[in-house]
Amino acid sequence: MPDTTINPAEAEHFGRLAADWWDPNGSSAMLHRLNPVRLKYLRERIDLHFGADERDRRPLAGRRVADVGCGAGLLAEPLARLGAEVTGVDAAEENIEAARVHALGQGLEIDYRVGGVEALTGPYDLATSMEVVEHVADVPLFLDGLAAALAPDGMLVMSTPNRTSMSRLLLVRAAEAIGRIPAGTHDWSKFLTPEELRTELERVGLEVTDVTGLGWSPARGLRLTRDTSLNYLLTAVRRA
Image 1 (cartoon, helix red, strand yellow):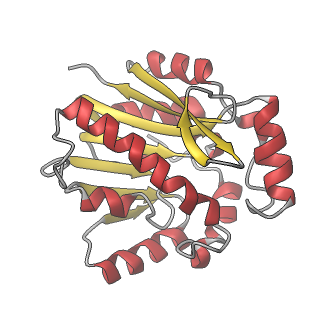
Image 2 (image 1 turned 180 degrees about the vertical axis):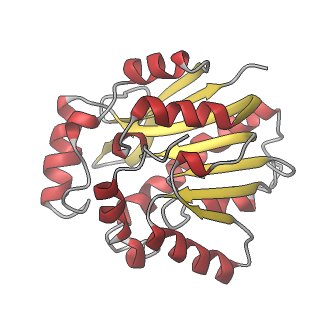
């Protein structure tokens, strides 16, 4: 498969953020706030799909996991701590270098690779791709690659902004204007609705089993919700 899912401009943009990725008060501060909410959702889906005990601290022991668009490892490291054999893939070489350095300091063994979805060597029991699909050069090809990398009965968990007036106002105009998200991070026209993403995933043979909103309010901050108008998490499985 040719390496055509990488958008060079997007890789360059995120590569410039690499040195700041692990600073909870830096340019990736929003990702640090998002991570606990993502992990809560992921843990729920892992326990449900794999029949894990919610008290088990390593529910992914013995399982292969890929995090596609891993950045500097904010999600890959918790997945490794849950017991998984983790492969992290990112288009920006700077991000992968930062990820390797941080994982080494944490005593974690994670297989970090520079590249796109084409760099995966499945099959994987679980694949994650958070806030990535809206940045790739070829969405159908990207989703083809994710589906092909899954093992039979493997699970895919994604998150992405919805293409609504709410997301344009809050995620693009307001968040970038006040510096919560680095300028130029989002192109609203590339956001996918849950219906569009579901259709594409069904095309590549995956069954969508859950769509949950990721919302924000001044009183409660970021949280899981039924409202998908801002952002959403989605789970799909490859039936055996």
